[in-house]
Amino acid sequence: MSNPSSLASADPQRPFLVIPAGGRGLRMGGGLPKQFRDWDGRPLLQATVEAFLTPGMPPLAGIALAVPESHLEEARSWPFQAPCTVVIGGDTRQESVWLALQTLPDLPLAPVMIHDAVRPFPPAAPLLGGPGSPQPLRWRPARRTFN
Image 1 (cartoon, helix red, strand yellow):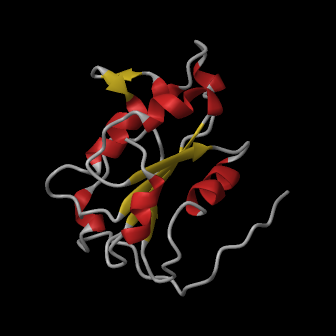
Image 2 (cartoon, helix red, strand yellow; image 1 turned 90 degrees about the vertical axis):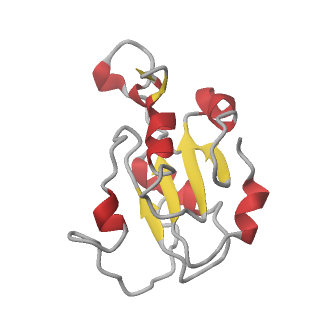
Image 3 (cartoon, rainbow, N blue to C red; image 1 turned 180 degrees about the vertical axis):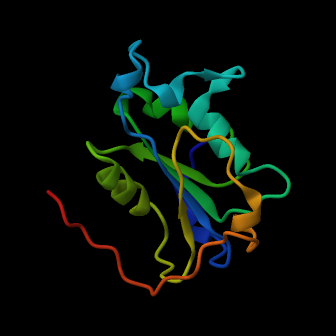
């Protein structure tokens, strides 16, 4: 269940997961955004988040989702085993990422992973420092660059 206040007490050594899922999925047709289509009995976005919460994955400090307003309450009702906040996404992926980032606590050195909403198979090895793991970047504060 979505609980934004629980992100405030997050462990700054653990990564946050941000998933921008505010798109409408028009290219697939059918009316329902692809991130909310059925995937083994649950919405694909929910399955994607749950994939990060399975054994063998690094423990998360918290999750921030940006979804279409029409699916806000649905996404907030999902029972994740990690602190989660859900906000209305923007018109672009960039704006959805920005809106989700704004829900995270002010922990400048905490790692943040940004993942696609419709890819429910995140690789564990790179996230745990194995082959293909991302290299740390120099820290730069995020700032809004759009209207």
